Length: 150
Image (cartoon, rainbow, N blue to C red; front, side, top):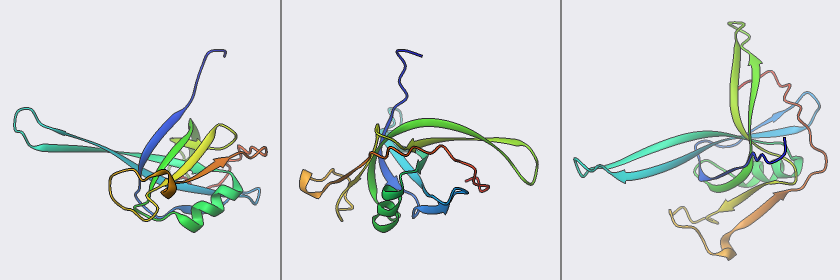
């Protein structure tokens, strides 16, 4: 369809260490749980409120998976650009169809940027403290045939 766009941009912190799995085709995939938060002051009570959203991030580029495995840990702040994808899978115990919505980092139009460089503060670092990794793989694999939903 001409004139459409599927692009997601997020800055948040990892809620857990990355999960690295092998797909049936032998390639690795990284799964990340990313938290984004917004805070505001309640107009009535004056009390500070906060809401956190959790996002599932899936990284397919093999080289990027290795970098994720080596450098990212729970609490790390990252910036991701990817595409929103919903996949269907069958729950083995109940036999029911289940759906997972994920941000996929794959191909030329996706990226992952590590923010903070050891700085766990809330402010963004200077350009010197930022590592950018572009997923420029020409080998784009949509093989999601792992039996383990998350």
